[in-house]
Length: 535
Image 1 (tube, rainbow, N blue to C red):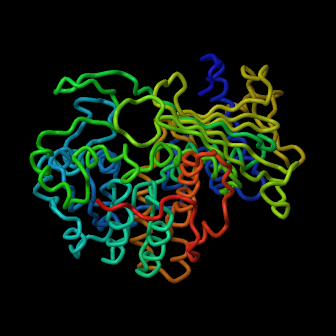
Image 2 (cartoon, helix red, strand yellow):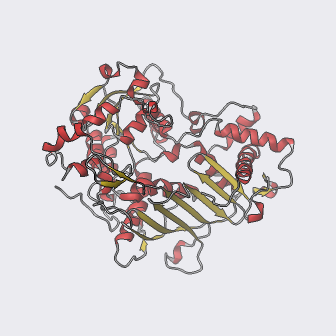
Image 3 (cartoon, one colour):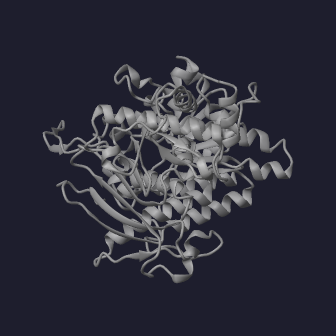
């Protein structure tokens, strides 16, 4: 992410971040810090053990003998990640549904046997080698929804199916965790929100950065004012899928997780049913991310994560406008979605004057740039937040590095001073005993293992909300809500899909975001496709 940082400078940046997290927790910061009191108590107690997300976000397993019974709808790539990361003490899967035989078998397997770093550990890892006797397969997810034991469903289907499956689940009385992007278009997002309200059921959407301890602490650093006035965020997610391979038929194609080989067992079982299943071909069923009728492209699959993070860093502000360029610039196959995208978003700064309108000059604007390419991963993915007093780099959801605003300060060890009531970076006392204690506290707040990406925590928290809201008072129900519910997730979908609309505009015009798009009670939606095409 940071091209010209040496390993030594990266380590300095990480230690700077740890010291500042610890110092802010000890000294206190301006109002708006989500867990200031928690951090103060942690540091005052001298706790050295890693802080759990449950403690940080204020939930706990107080129903150990009665985990929430769940069903999985869609057991492919993302379904496998969610199963691998779930905590059976909170969520117990008792059923699943998938139309592809290869996925039906795969969801039980621990894929770390082939790839030690795989997050897909399968049902067998959690429930034993006889898990297939305990977890029921339904050929049709509607049959799964009729199971009265199931309280919650996890939906990991292709994007164009999110809305129909979610609404069916809510109407069947189930709480829902649906993978991101929330839906294929914004009208569907609004329908999902309304369905949840009618059914009085919880709807959570899988933007897992809302449950990442790393992003929580990074956001507290940004919110404290240590960086000064944020003026620019550079976000990117670059991958290298430009490696040619030859498939079994002798056809040359590119190695690409979105363009996998079609398994013989899937073709044998489903080829005669493609139309009745709602697909135009086996290729569209298996490679659904490549087609505009079934997927949302790079902005839906990758960009939505990072624009969500940028919005969090900027106080969950909605963007003012977006300009974007993208296209199918590289792949010679029949995919329809872009393989390279480049976006410029305008967000309101702290001193932005909304009364002057989105086209006013000399207003306080934060520029957020986003790029995603498929042919080169010399830079990987992350966010670089640049302020008037400092820079914060969050890299690959695994580490954060903090520096002063000048290039010369990349190797400078820093802590933070709160003199005058305004936190600011300070290099004068960054290596003494107090600073070392701050660094230890900051590291403790983040944990000693690789940071969780939030999948486990989003499922734990939803289970906690489900189990406790039914026993609490009305005031508790307002508190027991997912951290990324329908309205927040709809905003994320609007940000991502409006960029797609800007790319597809023949004149690459700047699109201004409208307030009514973000209101689920209004019918207004962005200028994107309104209805999924039928086969």
